[in-house]
Length: 249
Length: 306
Image 1 (cartoon, helix red, strand yellow):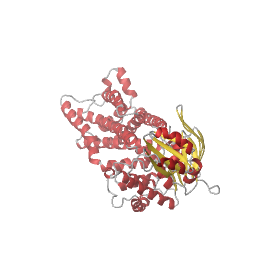
Image 2 (cartoon, chains in turn green, brown; image 1 turned 90 degrees about the horizontal axis):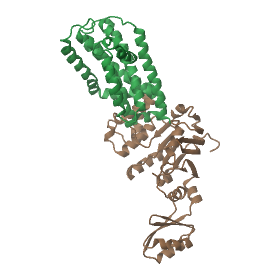
Image 3 (cartoon, helix red, strand yellow; image 1 turned 120 degrees about the vertical axis):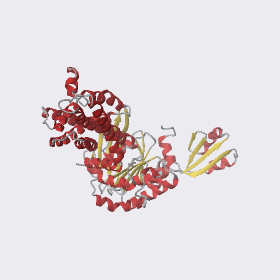
Image 4 (spheres, rainbow over the protein chains, first blue to last red; image 1 turned 90 degrees about the vertical axis):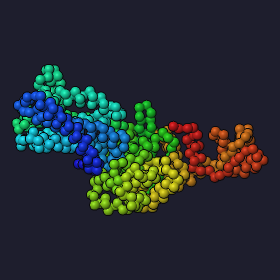
């Protein structure tokens, strides 16, 4: 449990910069949610039996969680690892690179969870998530956070410079957001595209969160949970492997 | 030294990066309470040696024992009782002075109360009393270095590793660090430092090892090294006609070297050389006792190492 000290270090920084941090993590998704939700929602009949904004709120919850986890593990993580050499300082203490990787991933997931949870709370206040089942979206959001934090940290420990992240953001995250059912039902996509979405983690987060927020139990919940767990677990293992290579060479 | 357990012992250490062998068969032994200096030009393998001793890098061959713990197998346990001052400050820029110490103490599993109890003493030691709420970017280079040193002491370590502790500091800041390091030695802490400042090594270290190309090429007290490796007197000569004069100097002294436009004459007795120079007003000269730097340059050469 030594990694907790790493988590607490990041938490203390976050607490000192809390207003800017929360604003940057929430302003974008909430503006998008209400802008697109009401604007586009006025043109659309119900989607999958709910108003468009309620449909989109569940998607936003997942995509905001994904973005917060990814930004924290990649950009902030790289800054701590490479720019500030915070990881080096930690490694002089009786912590290992495995502890640092674990602390970073759980921290990024925690921060991501807060984004997801806040969006859920806002949605509830606006009557978009009335069911008590919606509470179950909270642990799912944490799992989505873990999956993207772990994958993001793999990118970080492989990165030579900041530009490296643009490839992952532009070539993977942005298209994934489009095809994973955040903005519109993924089922209306051509089969091969849907198949791609189904091997990526975001789709499974959306498939779990949307029914829960609408007050239904998700179908194939176990499959979705397993995919997210595999991404989190494999990302963690791969991040540790490359981090060890980078730091104890 | 043999009766007590060594603070640090390394045998036949080897480490390569690609085709380059950075540490090639290094033996080291540091006694408890000793201030030990590892000297060497850039690229000699000093930093890699420190990283190996800390268990941060795994050796290709050889054995390390740090405070009685085998490294890297039990490096984590050893590091619990170790402090590290790295070559480049990596204080946490988001934190104040006090927060840096608090957060660092937590990495050692220290309770907040235990860290708080040490805070005053550490700040006093670092000369930062009253600055606990200062941001890191408002501190001078010397203050940052002292805070890094205080951070390395938060767990009350038995042994401190310091990689070039005063590089980049002005003389005032450097002397203050030296004073603090002597205080630590008096408290019985073992110090292992790397440096390429001979003055620093001569002032601080009980024992030195000179390292080049991954090997130890000499070891001993500063006096022993000077006595063993170099003639006790040096005359530095420069001015018009110094090249021609070198021939004459070779007849008067056992060793004559040239670096740029300066001639270095080494001798047990410099009187004949000085007598000759008095008759040559075109040559300027400086007569001084041999120093560790002369030993260092003799053993590692005068070529630039970048």
